[in-house]
Length: 228
Image 1 (tube, helix red, strand yellow):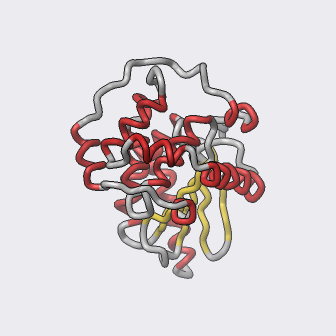
Image 2: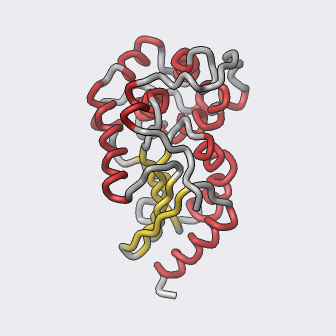
Image 3: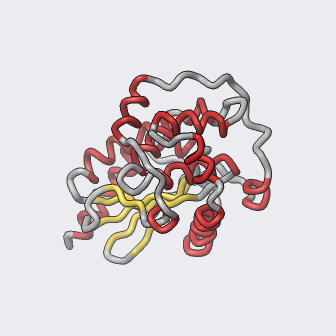
């Protein structure tokens, strides 16, 4: 399968992505405002920020591990157009749980990941959803960090707290270590990468995936978990 959203870590972390197309910072949509207001946030400490982020029942028999970058367009497509159906069919029915892991491809992805994790465990997936929904706006802004501040403000994280969050070197190092661990454990070099784990066995999927294809794979995994 074609690998997508690749970018060398050495360049990505220490250089600003000047190749990103610039566009004016758009106004936050009404739907996003509601979503973030419901997820009013305070700053989490590094320990809470780096706990495993799980969507769904922790005891679900099938685990879907996602390695993603918040600046990766294909990751955005997965979250906006694929995950909602998967969540309704498999996660809400307690067949599958999703574990989200950071695999940042550039500096802005690192900062966005830090923002989501600083929001705390209960609010993490709220912020993640908005960051992916608004990805075409904030990643193409004249200054993406300013656009991230605006998203943080709507979610209850003020400018000072945002600076404390993105200035947390321990959190930044932990996110980059999560990427390194993914590279080592699964030889990941592209996003999104999905790992389906059932009965202790892992299967890796790289690149774009459709609702239909992922649904078939998860249904088969669930049947295996039930001994079928």
